[in-house]
Image 1 (cartoon, one colour):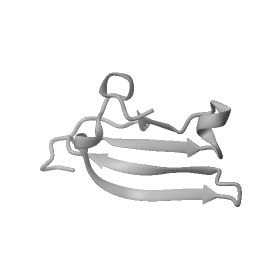
Image 2: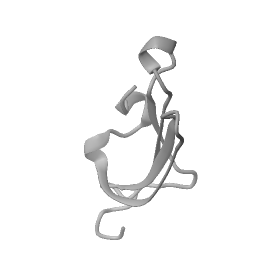
Image 3: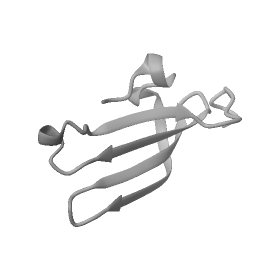
Image 4: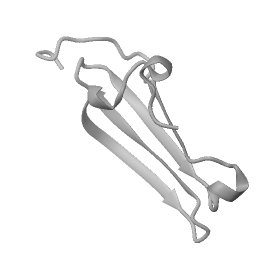
Length: 80
């Protein structure tokens, strides 16, 4: 599931920079991770995702979703 501008309130092209990232993977190809990003309008957001081993066979999808971080407000790019 990709980022969705309606659901997540931002889309990939809105990302200006990555501020932090993390990830976890195990031997069975389970992956979980995320990014804290700065958006072009000055807000901050989190993008997270997961992938389960054999996703196609198990019906457990690869997921990706985003949300604005609490307290994030719009700032002009000159003050960010």
